[in-house]
Image (cartoon, rainbow, N blue to C red; front, side, top):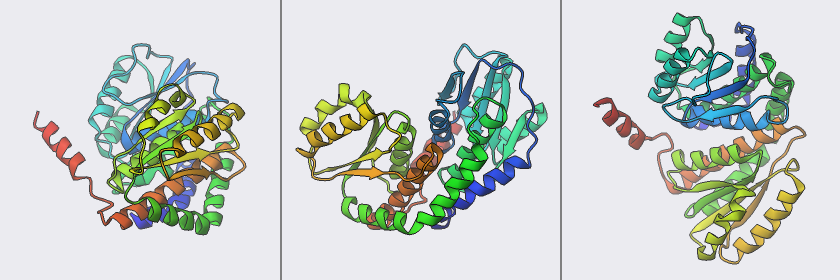
Length: 326
């Protein structure tokens, strides 16, 4: 996993190369987009939809279940994302998308999903296989952004911004690792809670997922301002069992930035460890990838501090094994 986390900036550049070598069809008229996928394959859809939200004039829905929304039809683009190509929920949705006559694209490394995409003549982008799905977000997220740009659904100059993000991460890797290691050493025995403003909530979810899988820690994430209307009161029962990370960006709406300052003050009365994590970069794409990379490194150092196997996902494998018997 160490090599895969280190390789994240390289994955972004390789994703651009892969996409540029892939034939992408022209779409018919599109009214909406559904990105369907789960876990490490699904989070890219959530983050991509937030990145392009100000540039895309049609709705993008992220689907994390066995069933597509009823509105899907021939004017819907369904992007099916499964790293292994064998995720049962995603394969079920692919079948539904075909029945609903949607326009379909696929992002995968292989498996049944790739076989079906080839057999049906669907647009498909193949990324390197054989690794934990969560370690391949650099590929899948980059390709989603490139795909939305290439289809003319979000004009964000994706290639240039992705290459710039990769350069930023290479330049800042020393400070990223130092910051991550320091945070991990301070918070190894705490339950992590990650907050971000609207536009970065997908990144906060990614942090929680990496804490779950890499560091074997439970935890949760939520979005500002939504958490201000209910969850905030729960911190009356806070304690030193928790650590709270506020993911901060100059892109955050100024009222939300003020909310974080006040909320942080409230939580600090109950929780000793509350940290503002400011991102870097001049574009939203750079800032998003910076925070993703920092969170990955924190989860890596947490796994070391806690003495856990960062790769092990035996509970997920057991669940899949039991489901396969049904």
